[in-house]
Image 1 (spheres, helix red, strand yellow):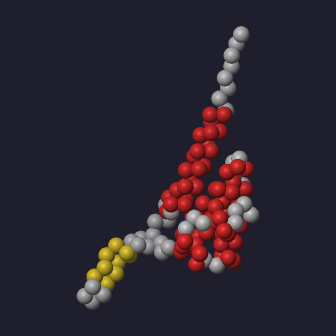
Image 2 (cartoon, rainbow, N blue to C red; image 1 turned 135 degrees about the vertical axis):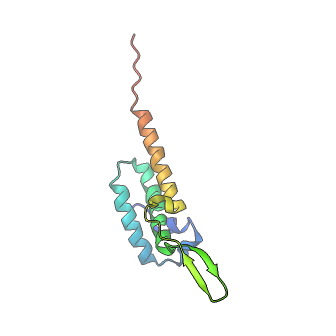
Image 3 (cartoon, one colour; image 1 turned 30 degrees about the horizontal axis):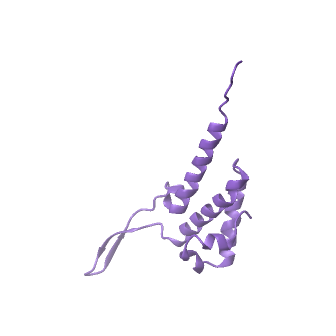
Length: 118
């Protein structure tokens, strides 16, 4: 595993209510995903931590938001779940994506060859 329960819980108090078994499962899933990426080892723990937090947050939140409520003769209308949001659905997924883009930019800049002819 690339990260720990303690490090994931440090991201937010909302993760303290999640069982260790459940967090371990999400850490294993995130670690497997991150291990399959071609990213430097120095970024792997951080990526696994944010992907774990993203997965846990998705499991904790309802996929449908209330868009309308009526008090008299109680009525509640929900939005349709947006299945296409992916990593953008949580702030942790957004950070995961930002880190990947940062790594990609660094790799692009390293691939440039500077030649000096004497």
